[in-house]
Amino acid sequence: MRLDWLRRPDVLMVVTSAPTYVATGEVLKAVDPLDLTPLRFLMAAAILGVYFLATRGKLLIRKRDVWRVVGISALGYGAYGTLLNLGQTTVPAGTVSLLLNTSPVFAFILGYVVLGERTSRRGIIGMAVATVGVATITVFGPGDLGFDWNAITILAAALVLAAFLIWQQPVLGRVPPVEMVFWGCIVGGLVTLPMAKFDINPQLWGVRTIIAMAVLVVGSTVLAYSFWNLTLAGTSVAEGGSLLFAVPLFSMALGWLILGQIPTLASILGGCIALVGVMLLGRAQNIPHQPDKEDEVLTTSPVVEEVVSVAITPEQQASLDALVDQAIAEVGARLATISLWRPVTGDLIRIYTSLPEIYRVGGISAELGIDWTEQCVARMESFIAESPDDLQSDAFEHHDTLAALRLGAGINAVVQHQGRFLGCLNLMDAPGSYTHEDLARAQIFAEWLAPVMNAISSHMGTVNT
Image 1 (spheres, helix red, strand yellow):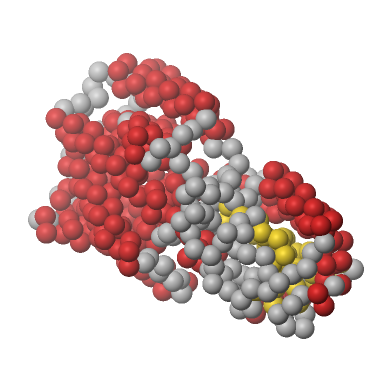
Image 2: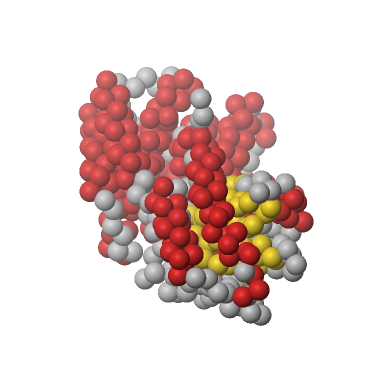
């Protein structure tokens, strides 16, 4: 039985976010709330820095985005983290989780008003159902919810969180999601450092405190924020943020197991209602992504590459159009291209593109890495890139353009004919869009493309440089 859903960034986001409030509550027993914010984020920044060095990852932030990223980070990491810590000094972890999950409601409204986002009717119904579930838990839950003035601080954190989601969303199209977490942790840690009391008493750090701190930094910051950004990079603020409604279900379970906070019948009922809403929102996300020519496409410059003239007959063009249209409908893609291998020059020439404004027919890919050549040309093996980090390999070019188009996952399906490598069918979409089942379906279309690509390859003499 395949468990590909366990690899989805939205699912992993929920799982890694759930322990945040229990871990924070445990650490606050030994650390002042104003000390915890810089400590948490600077430790996370150090871990991410080591990750980028170990993987030789490139930082792709551009000058025009620097100050915007600084502001986003100060808000979503510095201000949000500080408010969360201050509020949780008296508000129980379960209640914090419930109150913070009003942020998707704010995000839904702000996304509608500020970004002009729209969602399907199913998404609106899912939002409404999830809101009813959270309201049921809050209003009809146990009387001793710990709702005091610090709860207002938590609600303020929820509002800050919603504004952070709105402000960050467009930037995720230009700055890779994991890199955004790196900058967020650095800025968030540094801007809150002047407020720190530096009142950290090592004698109060028991085993539970150390474990909680590790969970908070690694799981709830490095991983949770990364999965969160990967999710938001591939969907709208309304739909992506609404997935956080699932977090209280896990938070209540952890509170029960670790802190002994037994949920009431109303909490269980409200949690089930919220889960139904999340499932509806998840179904709403399955609408295939299509290129947004009024936004990303029109504001993205054509890639810089050598372009040659390619002669393709109307019949061949019609075959390419029909097969790619079917592949997009069944597999999904915001960008689809077909590249033909030229063995004499050892490069690829683009013979089809769904975004001719940016990736032009006749464009040549000459900087092909050894790993890609060995896998695709020599062994004729297709592959899948499931996240923006995977796209940093030598199999992909024009990384700035991919980021601008919010393309964070790709399929490279090898096309061959009688044991001869002909080229590739390339499909690209938002992060987390593809599974190995999608790769298998794309490979079928690659096989159907073989006859027409073989015919085009046989007339390579018609290609004029």
